[in-house]
Length: 292
Image (tube, rainbow, N blue to C red; front, side, top):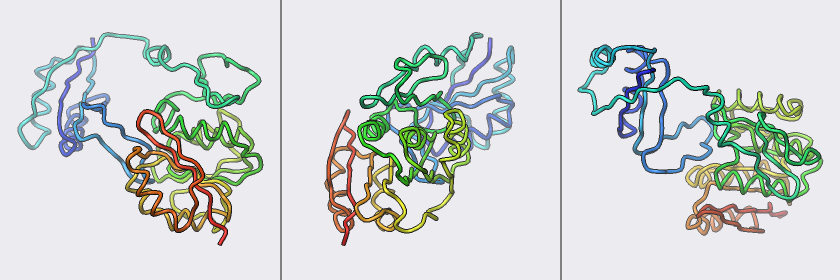
C-alpha cells in the first residue's frame, strides 16, 4: 500500500502546502478540482487553479502516517489544514486511464486516437495522442469545438497559429489536415514539451514551430486558433488583428455562452463574426479579419 494524505484547501494554500509535501518526502502531489470548475487552456505563461482544490500527497510504500504528519508539521509554517489518509493499492497505472480514453471523431474524417488502440478508420486523419502533462486531449467542449472546426474546414496550405497550444492537439490536427505550418505560442515549458512529443509522434514536427511570446509576423496567419479564457481574449484583440491576414480566420473558444456578446462587440472593430456554435454551455466564435 502507498500512503496518501489528502487536503481540501483554497487555492491560496496550494503552493505552500505543495512545497511542504515535497519537503516532507512526497513522491508526487496531485491537484484536483473540488467543485467541477473548468480550467481551460491558459494564457501563455499563466498557471490557473480552481478556487477549491483537493491536494493529495503520495508517499513511499509503508511510510507510517505518523511520520508523514510529523514531517509536514515541521515543513509547513502554519497549522496543518484538516486532512485524511487514503491508502492506495498497487495497480498497473498505465492501464487505469486507457480504459476511459477512447477514439473520438471530429467532423467527417478527423479522429483523436490514443496510442493503445487501433484507429477506427485507418484511412482517416488520426491524431495519435495520450493524456499528458499539458492541457487538451479533446474531451472538453471547448477543445472539441475547435477540433470540429478544423475537421470541417479546408486548412490545406495554410499558415496557422495555435495561441495557448497546451498539449498541441490543435496544432497537430491542423498540420495533419494539410496546414503548411503552425506556430504554437505558449510560455509553459510543459506545453512545449508535450507539443514537441505529440508533433513527433504524429510525424509533423517539421510543420510546428514553438515560441514563448507573441513574436509572429504581421499579416502572416491564415487562421488563428485561440482556445483560451474570456479575460485574456478580451485583451488580445490588437494582437490577433495584427497577425491575421486580411480575410483570415480567428477561431476562439474557452467562452461561456453568456460571454459571447461582449467579445463580439469588442472584436467587431477588427473582425466580422461569421459563425457561432455552442456545446454544454461553452461557445466557439469564428471571425474573419476585415479587409479594410
